[in-house]
Image 1 (cartoon, helix red, strand yellow):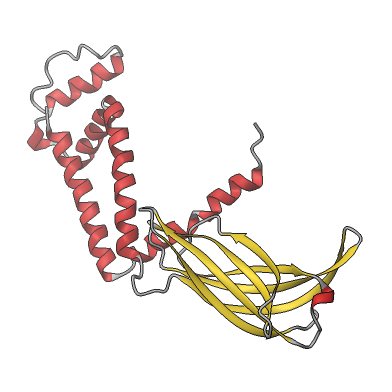
Image 2 (cartoon, rainbow, N blue to C red):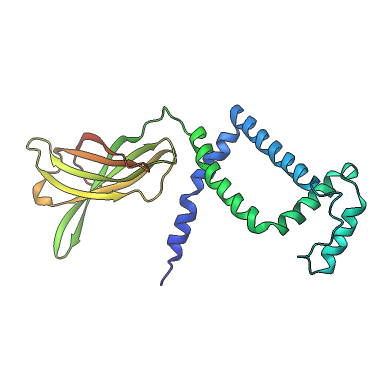
Length: 248
């Protein structure tokens, strides 16, 4: 099994926009309220969780095997729940968290799994378009491949995505055709590996035979984006434009 470093880096970098979207949401007035509520719930949970057992922990913990834990436990018994400072409660909270980590860690992971889609849905711009915004021809260049000459027509495809967690722009197909006859001269599929939020420029293009085209004539680019949701719905968005064929 070979793990390519570039693929690992790509997976990490590809998920950075999600973090940026969540941070941007928390900078909005509504996001600040949600953030304060989350912090308040965490602090309240810390206080409540650390208060339990303040006077009833005099019994020996049968699962404890280390003297250090017994020492911390005896110190905790001397202080009543009412006299605890926030720092004491925080220490007690982390001690209990470590004791019940087999339950709390999976619960935390499940909370994050549920929480991120909710925040992502709240932060997403529901009025933003989902599909192709524009296609710009960026010149052609001749290459020699397998003892034959081919033209590669460069095109910048501008894709738009609101950033909803359940929507995905899987790939798009770019076709070059004769404007008059409609004959397809070349086509390529381009995959969009990671979901994104906002507008993204993807440099793409297609190979064509130089004998099929004339420099200085108009031709047509048709880009078809294949969209889907995690609930099984699929559809397409098509963008067509004409361009003047020129060399780079």
